[in-house]
Image (cartoon, rainbow over all chains, first blue to last red; front, side, top):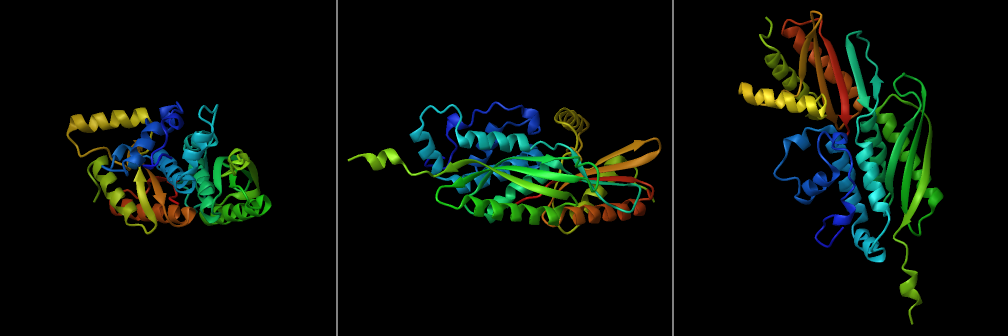
Length: 209
Length: 108
């Protein structure tokens, strides 16, 4: 994040398919966020995919803050920064995906929740674990058949200095609690993979006389 | 009594959905291309913009489709929306409608 709160340009060029976000791109959503979501754009506000992506980008902005500047300064020409990979995950996970059924006694009721919404629920659990940033989320198993076991797989970036096992356990518990509130999924396992450690101390600076 | 057009049914359904506790938003259904076409049709017809509740007739049966964002239990709110829509459609003289409700977003 630059000092005025905007995403650096080199981190906005993700070139994702605009159909993933109902005709919008992650770059457009970043601009929309930078503008404070004003004036309201109905094509964005009425798009569930865009809302999912905006939720995740706002949380990323809140958590990462000056990490963006430090990251760009330390690696002026990165092949792919961890922030870019997280943004890629946000955009990809905003897709609706499969439709997960919700039970109802009426034969004329067709109720469900999208896989994209569930990934959003998983991602939102990072709010319960300060400093943690959830990247890609995946649901493995047949989510379209009620009762079938499902495995949740989430990538995580953790802050330097925190206990990784403890953070992983807290996130796992937060994800499980949120899924129990919102879905009827049979969650057989929640796998957390630590992909990155952020806010590392600058050892080069410490070595200078 | 029955609504005279899909647009009137859609408007009544939208009001019903928005009245359900826990519903935060309605979202467009359909694909980006389909939504763009629907928006163009609305513009040409001079109607008030694209309906967020999709109403269609298939083989003599009414189908009502809605995509929502919720802030309370997604599963429970989904069922509550269905039941409210069912009651609304019965009042409009369409008791045998098939109702499709999808939770597409749960704001953090």
